[in-house]
Length: 304
Ligand SMILES: Nc1ncnc2c1ncn2[C@@H]1O[C@H](COP(=O)(O)OP(=O)(O)OP(=O)(O)O)[C@@H](O)[C@H]1O
Ligand SMILES: [Mg+2]
Image (cartoon, rainbow, N blue to C red; front, side, top):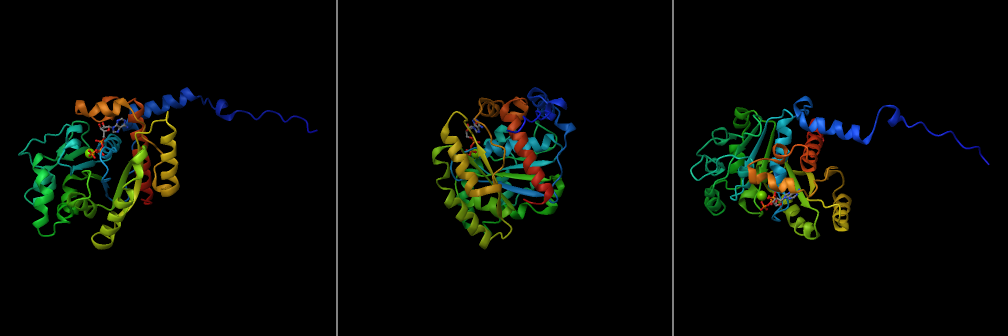
């Protein structure tokens, strides 16, 4: 019989590692993001946040990821392309009828910079709001020339340079209509939020084939770069099943960070705030910070 081996020294402990120390370090990162700048992307990134399924966390993810990048020093723009105007509400940006908005930008009447308002959440965070006027755009666009590429025409390098942003998130409505097509034509990347729920994967095939069509006919650069699992509820087996299925199917495209279901996340827009401003130490805020870090690190490597 072999003599018992001496116990392995616990190096983590020797180095002063404890779960509380790790948590404290994480909280410090969240509460003092300015001390933890994220790398700038190797080139400007335009991400369309799309899923024709309603209520899966498109808007919540667009505004909170944008806010997380902004508080880490990266200039970021959210384009609210949903007539519901939820992203504009969450960022507390004026979006009453008559305000220069994405609608006038699509019509070519107002430049991107003139429609972009700075959000009070961060001087690095801008939003092109959506007003109720956008509700008619889906139909009005049908008869317009270059109807699929109106947003792309507005998002020229010069126009973006005027605002000077590194990241643009386009928040899509829950449909695959012309507004979403405009977003896909204007972007290089699609970010798909998937809710950890039973019907989450239904309709995903249709979304992917639409992305494929746009990629083949209108925007060869387009690719699904990022999948984000949202509203994860650790108490249910179902959430794990969905998570595993999505990871098996999409591999590394899926961010390691999963956004938990959290009351703070759902309360924040009611105060015109992102969860980062509303409760920076909450699990919801921390997970959006972690997801933003993953996105930024992928962008800096150029692997996106
Ligand atoms: N992690 C979360 N925890 C709890 N509630 C959440 C979370 N993420 C989103 N919600 C809530 O779920 C609802 C739907 O989220 P959200 O509006 O972001 O989805 P959406 O995909 O943009 O919806 P729509 O398709 O209508 O545009 C909102 O009430 C939001 O506050
Ligand atoms: Mg939305």
